Image 1: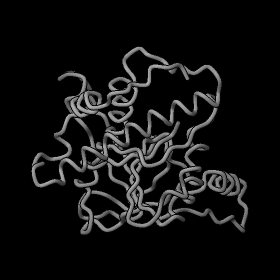
Image 2: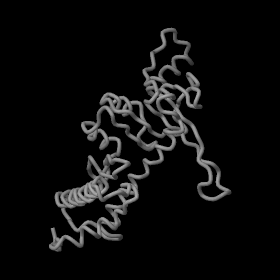
Image 3: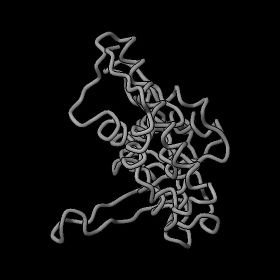
Image 4: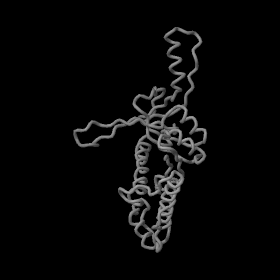
Length: 244
């Protein structure tokens, strides 16, 4: 399963599901209809590619994704906040051009690419004082450092890991630690999976309403999902104990 989730509310807004061997990038394409302008998508380095980046920006969405250290991102223009403008090129065409250069071909092929901004920084003190700093490279469609400074994007990117917290809420707190899905047939597995997702969404929506009410002054991010789950369970009189 590949999911889209809001960093603020932890609400899972869309999912794509498939067989165990289905690749994440292939499933991610099914989420494109759920994207559009005024959305910023954060993603880990496993998703970054020339093709997928192009398909994403065609929806009008903004992106801030981590890049692998091997990704070719040349410095085209240094920016005042320490970031720089670069080009995410088609690797197939780039390799073809390099072959032509080696063979001294006159009419070189054009290498298509996406204009991007790159932010490089290090995270220290992870894994103990003796651990080496970890280097991050972020690639984003937000090109103007005055509009969105590099430090803001660095801080924002690390909220991507809140999706893992969301999965933990579903798999551990809601379903129960060490408990597997009860269903044994593929259609029933899908049904049970979506039941878990819908229940999680309903609880998260309840938490949002609690913070919007006159009496709810606590910030949403400070509310406990586990306590909210227990509150809901106390008010549900008929638990579904039958086998699917």
